[in-house]
Image (cartoon, rainbow, N blue to C red; front, side, top):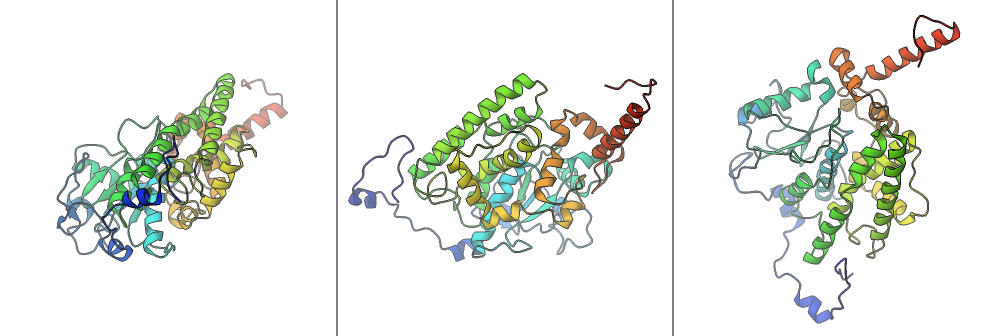
Length: 394
């Protein structure tokens, strides 16, 4: 398929198209998988000569000074590999995780091993930061070593610290919201881990189209957040109209080029960035705001079903692992129920209460917010049944 600009389909002859092909041969899959990285040549094992904006972490803080992390407190699982510190219910982190999993699948013939070879992860539960969450201990240890706090998701690669930046977050107890397009980590992963630039189109025109799609769809996370959390019914109705208009735009964009994905036949960053929010629209907004993607947007629905079948997406959206259940302050295991549970306090405008309850008595595998709500409901039921006059029933 001849890739054209989003705005205009230029007619090119076969001769012109052939002449525009790059003379530089792409590295083989085997060579790329063996190298595992395209960053600057390391000066020592696991440490790059280049320094990221957010600086470096010391080999002592990551455990890289030791031959094995076994027995070392708060060390990264494999300091010699890229490590993503994240929450598995955070859509911003999900984009980076999906990109890492895509790289893993590509390096393993489309398969995702139980323990990925290219990277490791550390699950972090921010609501339990004051309840001795192991992931938060590592985050604080790395941040303290740099005299600066780290904001999830964080990627540690070759001694460098990578974050999405400070300006993208909107504010949420679980760090699940961001405004605009968040592509710093995915873009770095695509260029530095596994086969270089395998998550972008193969030519400059296609890359232009991909970046334009990222720009056109950049309001999707904020609209999801506003529709879910705004206390005004009038404002939520307005946000639902705006979200529907943007979904219609995405549906139209999916018809622009022939193929399964936004940029044609290839899954790119443009698809990876919007998938986590589309998933939450399907699962979360339908539960709390009676908002569904209308059947008339069949290109978007077909795209969603297609993306769900990718091995990397299946791995990223699978039911919770034992590690997840032993980390986060939620109880549901099935993916769909888990996401609904995660956003319950945001939908009920009680994020501060969620935070306070977990700071006071939270623990992994226990949703103290739901327990509190259940107790309040029981008390309310008793008062109503006995016509109690000692408290005010709202």
